[in-house]
Amino acid sequence: MKNASFAKSIFLALICILATFLSACSDEPRETPTQGSLTMMTSEDVFPVIDLQVQDFTRIYKEAKVTNLRTSTRDAIVQLLNDSVKLIVSSRELNAEEKSAVQKNELEIASTKIAYDGVAVIVNAQNTITDITVDDLRAMLTGKKERWKSVPGSNLTSAVVAGIGDRNSGVYEYVKHRVANDSSFGKNIEPFDSTESIIGFVRKYPNAIGFVGLSWLSGGHEGIKVLNIGDPAFKSDSTKTELEFFSPHPANIYRNFYPLGRAIYIYVHNAGHGVALGFSSFAAGNVGQKIIVKNGLVPATLPVRLVQLNNQSEKEE
Image 1 (tube, rainbow, N blue to C red):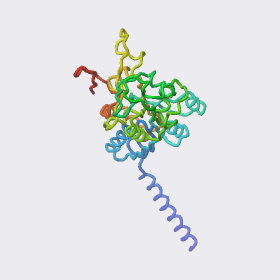
Image 2 (cartoon, one colour):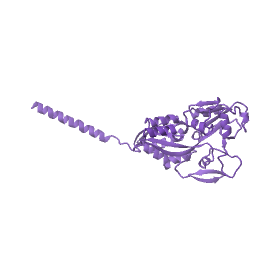
Image 3 (tube, rainbow, N blue to C red):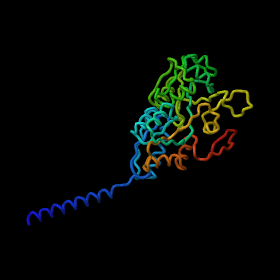
Image 4 (cartoon, one colour):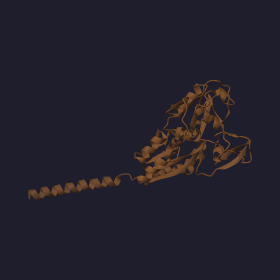
């Protein structure tokens, strides 16, 4: 009898443990597009505007916890392909090697274009130059024009020193391909690991020139100025023969007048039904796109209407 009573006690104890376990499992929060956790990575050169989107997303959806890590474009892509993170924001498309890795490993990568951006060219406020051609930029970067006295519009005679992100950054890769035509950079190039450092460098040295993502300039910066860029292939009117120079104004980027425009992409690996899907939808949706507009970039999914204001095109939501 004692054995039977003991066995019954053990059985009842197991039932209680199982019931407690099942109850705990049923109470666990279910991952949804607006509930759960996400660690994402954003290219350093577009970080400011994307982090504002993250802040707004988590403010609206309080049960979503998003950690947005700032890193280089190349590192973000590597981490995505290795499945270390589910979502990244990149200032460039995947290159041929990366696309090959996606196909070879049969990875489920979804992409969404969320904005149009520009690489801005900045100089010290003491430099009198306001306009520069892509050809002159190329010559400066490749060491063919080593001093400012050979660049039209500048009052300087000193050596040119160019500040740019390190070789893993989106700006570096873009400028290397688009401006330098994949030629080797000259000895006058100073690589930096952050855009803040590039802006500080240009502000400190009158002979410096820098290349930065446009979203870093939305708040304005004392001691520097943004140059207008000219390229014969970029015109406001195909019948014009005189070279035109364009600022990285959103209207010029939208109409493809600014020669150094580019796009910003969200890449998601196996999004499922979690927060990665929720944030990517938010960034491409109405609220997320308005954040893009308010920070000087061009929305990729929100309609844009151009109006004439003070003889200069502006954009409206």
